[in-house]
Amino acid sequence: MVDISFKINGRRVNPNSLGNALQRAMFESVRKAIIKQVGAIRCPQHGQAAKIVYKGRSFDKLSFEVGGCCEALIEVVKGKLK
Image (tube, rainbow, N blue to C red):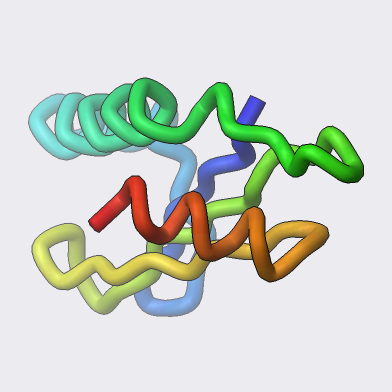
């Protein structure tokens, strides 16, 4: 499965430990949408899934980085997420 993480102000955020129910629901919604879009994509050569990190100063200012074993995998995942 695709590895998805969130970083706010440089700190990794675990959506399950957020006290704010609305923020927790928003993070979970984003996570589910990403899995639906790219969760099944694997590198055809290595069988690896992508690693996606959402970063920003706040939830409403997130951008994402995609990593993986091959540039081809990264480009496919980025294309699906745009």
